[in-house]
Amino acid sequence: MNAQPKGTRYEDAYAATVAGGDADGAGGGTGAHHVLVLGAGYAGMSAAVQLGARVGRRQNVRVTLVNAQERFTERLRLHMTATGQQLAELSIPELLEGTGARFVRGWVTAVDADARTVRIDDDRVLHYDTLVYGLGSVADLGAVAGVEEHAYTLNSPEDAAALADRLARLTKGNGNGGSGSGSGSGSGSGTVVVVGSGLTGIESAAEIAERHPGLDVVLLGRREPGATMTPKAAAYLRAALGRLGVTVRSGVEVVEVLPGAVELAGGERLPADAVLWTSGTRVSPLAAAAGLAVDERGRVLTDAALRSVSHPEVYAVGDAAAIRQGYGVMHGTCQGGMPTGVHAAVSIVRTLKGKAPRPFRFGYYHTPVSLGRNDAVVQFTRPDDSPRRIHLTGRTAARYKEVVSAAPWPTYGRMKKMPASGAVWPRGGRFTRNGAVR
Ligand SMILES: Cc1cc2nc3c(=O)[nH]c(=O)nc-3n(C[C@H](O)[C@H](O)[C@H](O)COP(=O)(O)OP(=O)(O)OC[C@H]3O[C@@H](n4cnc5c(N)ncnc54)[C@H](O)[C@@H]3O)c2cc1C
Image 1 (spheres, rainbow, N blue to C red):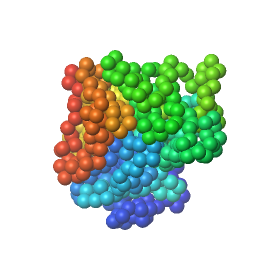
Image 2: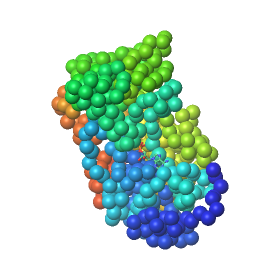
Image 3: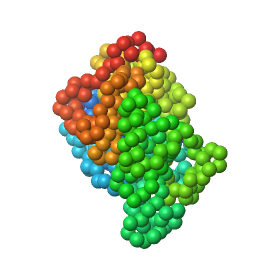
Image 4: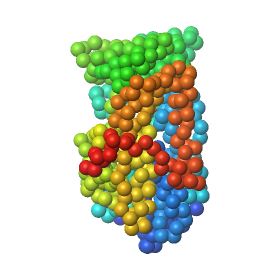
């Protein structure tokens, strides 16, 4: 996978793909330093906008952002897509206009860390001097047998839309099979099983129950929903799920997803007209395949400045990175992902000026969980993500959650004009002071 394919055209592909791009685009042969950002999720977008804004149109630095889609995926809202709600059209190339960053739409198929190239789809290859690796994470389809074949996921807007379509058909009583479907009455019923009692599973189960009150929604997981919250906040969350009609079964292990059912450890089978899989995440295998040092989950191991420990010209950000702080390795969130992207960009700019990058420090501050459109729980946390006593519930929490979900896009817009505005986040105080360096 690391060999450069015959007939590869570095610059033609780039020039043909990038609106307004020039023929020397990818930095090859121009003497310009080329920064390539892979993945326009919350973290990669932060890096690209920061870099674009900070280097502007400097002739000696090129910034290119590569992503599978031109439309920004608001992953925080994919449970809304899965229930048929329309999200805003957010164009990544439009957002980058006026910055020094350019956009290439494409699916990354390989990284060659020795040649410092990235292959996109089949025949395009882009060169980099510095790489920002931000390909995110998706639900783990290989977690148990049958997930890939029989379960829905929120891995992409298309996957979420496929579930929305299924739920709409069940609700219309036109489910075509399964336990509760096919009545054709217009007030159809059916059972939707959501596997995974983490935050994505909770938000999805609540949203489905609220939008489709005729369906039976069952939330399955190893742990009680809200297990990481204070007992009071968790009790509110579970009561809210109850009010929405969600049946919660915790302490269970799903061992297989079958057509029309899930099987639990011990042999019990639960009928299901639709199964949504939210349990566990996995990252792209590209980093490991490229020979970057990765952890047991395939996430890029970083030093204190977010550089790959094996390839310092590669920065890793967001869910794709295993970033150690004083309290442990960060887990995937938008609240932590955006700062990693900003920090990588600032570090690259510092390095280009001949300065050393600073250590990255981040402390969590909240866990906001939507429970449909009008209810939520916001658990405030210590920097290590353990719960503080204070939490919000009800409409206030729902409004808070909405502000959080809506914030990234306007934040990118602000960063374009004022990059420093994006460099503000809780550093974690004593929780991160001495533990960031590996
Ligand atoms: C329903 C839901 C609700 C959530 N709610 C919250 C919340 O309230 N708060 C919070 O902090 N976190 C929340 N999260 C988690 C949060 O969404 C992730 O932690 C965050 O998206 C990670 O950002 P990222 O930039 O690392 O990766 P991603 O957002 O996953 O972005 C990765 C990007 O890379 C692209 N990509 C991947 N592979 C390739 C490839 N080979 N070629 C080209 N492009 C590629 C993808 O298309 C995507 O655009 C939620 C997640 C879900 C699913």
